[in-house]
Image 1 (cartoon, rainbow, N blue to C red):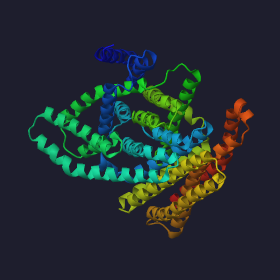
Image 2 (cartoon, one colour; image 1 turned 120 degrees about the vertical axis):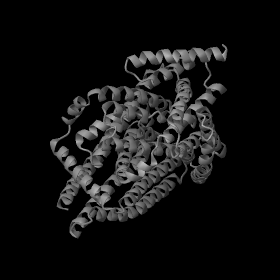
Image 3 (cartoon, rainbow, N blue to C red; image 1 turned 180 degrees about the vertical axis):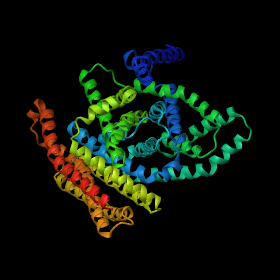
Image 4 (cartoon, one colour; image 1 turned 60 degrees about the vertical axis):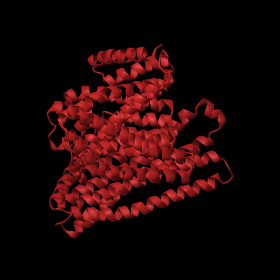
Amino acid sequence: MDILLVFTITILSASFIAVILKKAGISPIAGYIATGLIVGPLLNLIDPSNDIVVFFSEIGIALICFQIGFTMKLGFLRRMGSLLMIISTSMLVIIGLAMATFGIIIALPSISIFVLILISCGSSTSIVFKILERKGILQSEQSKLTLGALTVEDILQLIGLSLLPSFAVFSALKIEEGMYKISFVVFVVLIVFVIGIKLLPRVINFVSRCEEDEVLTLCLLGVTIGFGWLSYYIGVSFAIGAFMAGIICSTLEIPECVSKRISAISELFIVIFFISIGLNMPRLDDLILILSSLAIALAIIATKFVAFSGASILGGFRIKEALRYGIFMMVISEFGLIISREAYRLQIIGEELFIASPLAVIISAFLASKLSEDEEKPIGFMLRFIPSKMLSTLEGASTSLRRLISNSMKQGSPFNTIVFCIFKKTVSVVVIGTIGSMIMQAILVLNTPFTFIFELIALATVIMLSALVILSLRADIGQFSYSLASGGEAKSASRLNSALKGFMESLVILALAAILMVNAFYFIRALIPYELEVTGQNFLIFALILLIVIAFSIPILGKIMGILREIERIIDSL
């Protein structure tokens, strides 16, 4: 069949299906992906490797990333930096713990768990913005913090996307090549950004002088694709260059009419990108595959809701506010589709996770839009399941900490710098553990007499590097505590320092333990006889790991709750 005719049928079908689903309250994205599934795997009308499809979908990725970068407000991040870092760090730790535990139970390798964490990190900026605008709370302080958190999430996902090829190399035990790739990515990003920040404003300002909006629109589109091509040509992701172009353009004075035109042009290519997701999917005729993907999608949505709600409480939101914004932020970002597509292309995730990503985007958009119509009902229902003692502890600790943080920021203390250091080092511990975990899993495949020795060396290296970061983290927490307690008694400041160190160390230990348990899981699987592997391995592994997780987590979480109560008492005394 002629490619133009197929293209016409595909676009019209996507429009028709999207309208039907929209009337049913389901995101149009579901219609686009369903169209790709129909014309691709089901009817075989379009080859997903077709040059036109690949070209259009790559342009769609570039424009998605450009718009993400273009909507960022870096000045706002600087003003609200400390609170955003607290919320973002807490959310990242919670998502990492939850997804590592879930990945252990369903037997995912570390690299797939890393992709799962990346997908779970991001919320859809456009949908969350529309929900906040519809509720009339766009200008509230909590909404501004939420929009700032969306920006941090986008940055984290872009960093993760750029590191995916390097982590894939690590999982193949090519350590030297993996380190080279990471260094190369950092170098290329810096070079492209420096060139862009020097050259791009001059080009845009020169074109703007002609006062023709069409010419400026065309120039911005060319810049987006050009930066994407430049980063791809140098050897990193096409999306990274487009994202950096968006960030640089966000600092310039771009007329609103030009921004709207770019958005309108982007829609066509973005729709084709969503269709290409459906084209690359396997045939959905395996019930087990569908149910597995659905379970992963629901786990992603639930984790995102719990993580952002919990992080908001630690950032000073009241319980009801935290749950409310957790509902708004449960919408999984469309950027997760780019991550899953890239990971699937690199063969580091299976079909279940690749299918779970669009399912999570579609289901979360539907749930968020429905629950946000009257969020008081689901919030009231959820509060029934939280013990009153835990509720009062969390409420009191978060309120006291938020009040003290606000005072410290007003007094001009070096608060933002300290919090940013804590954020960087917490992320460093997670990255060290993740890379070490991938290397240890790859060593298992070697099956040599020295495998066990190599495993011990890798484990000792991970523990040693993590310990060094934690020791330096303790010094930052000490500065953080005395900054919070400035003007208070030295004794209270010392007690606060001890309590916060205990709190952060408990979270870091919990994160490291989750990463190491991923590797313990593979040892357990290897020890189970083949007969059990055939008959009941999955059930046995699920039950065993779940018991280990519960037995380990309950005392640690109990300790964390006790520390939170201690922090509340100390802050009240200050």
